[in-house]
Image (cartoon, rainbow, N blue to C red):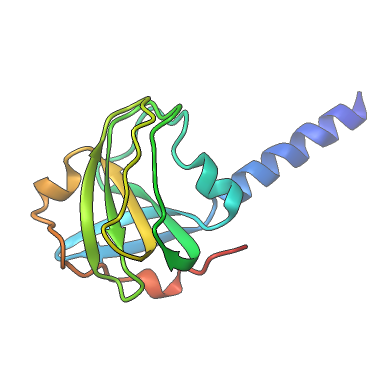
Length: 143
């Protein structure tokens, strides 16, 4: 019995640590509380099984190197908007993603970051391609 309790506590601590890093980002005058997904496991899990996000909360995906990193919404319960962001912090393109789908959403260039927010967040805040995202420089990927 004691080993099972220890295992459960270890599992919960490990799962929480994958999502524990948070950053404050800024796009224009909007401030974003972003949970960082910088490990292969946290990037793969993303926002799966999350039922809601606060108005200015999102998930920042950080990759080890810039590339054509694709996204889908398998097992993701809420519709999201995604910004594909270059290594220099500029949004390359945006995409709207429907919940629980396997449609692939792709960047139109090489990206080092992707930011998922509630559906319509970028439009509501007037964010378009070529907009700079501030605060990314402290987000480092874990391999």
